[in-house]
Length: 469
Image (cartoon, rainbow, N blue to C red):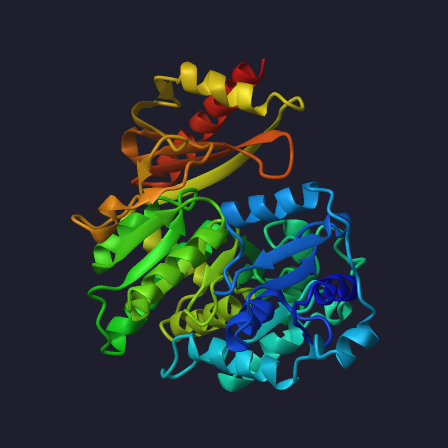
């Protein structure tokens, strides 16, 4: 980070360094709070330490979208000589300074204010892990502001350590990353596990039920949060009319049903929370940011307020804790609350498939899928195919809607909508030579949903292998 600061200073750019190591959401907040033109965080995020790299944010605190990323890459490829300035000289010239420690307190205050509150909380023991990352201190600050102190931190994972000694792949979607926290829950009887990835923009959740700790998927937490945020507003006497939530196109389709039930609009963006952040910026520019309710994505990313423009695993964890308390007062843990949702809206299951592709063959493989689309997957006929590489209107539950004229950026994604509300999404990985498939099955019962999911997974795997051949 110091090297980046010295290069920026040498080019006449004033640089503010955050105190100590900080989570990505704090950096996002700092860009707006300090009135900066851009922000940089160096992190491996939820990946292994060898994936350390840059996240770049624009003046809104929104992660760089494709046009900005391409411009940065073009400049890197230009071969222009890199200038650098010693940090001491940069400070003397007024080009380098440290941000006051109060920044983190301002962030924690804003994050806590974004989380629903004002209701009697049920006593609930909970376990928290920052997975050797940066989220511990800010998260506990948020919880303190919410009046919650019943948090047990996993001691062996409490301090920042870039080698991630107890979980080499600190991804909160991975059961192995949550293993130590789940063990503590089981041993102590704590009802809830919350785990941030090392840069604290994602959160994994475990629920103790009948003595066993069960991990919830990102989609399952997203459904619970969306439903609870709506229920809480109704209970608090706040209007739902005109409120809008955002989800990515690969987030569970059951979210649409919940949005329709509560009369809010759900808009879908391309994969990547940067696109949700971009939409919150557009709401703000239109003077309608108060309409923002929630942002959700299947990979454990959530945003509960417009104080930043990216997902926030710490405020997300705080919201999940309060949601668990809200349900606890009604006699349910989150696993039971989820089953009640499925009974009301229908059962929905999902599975991700990854198929490796030879280097340089990803585009050709996607091309074969486009030229020879299937007519049926599992026991369901394909009712509609959407090619996101062509101009596509932003999917929305509202009709009519002001976003009917909003086109999504072109993206190499295929969507197959099937009978029974089932869906398959296929896209290339953004980092590796492989295709990712998101498979969703819906049904009126758990047994039928699981049967459909098995058939879909079988046929989608065969489809990918055939296209890859």
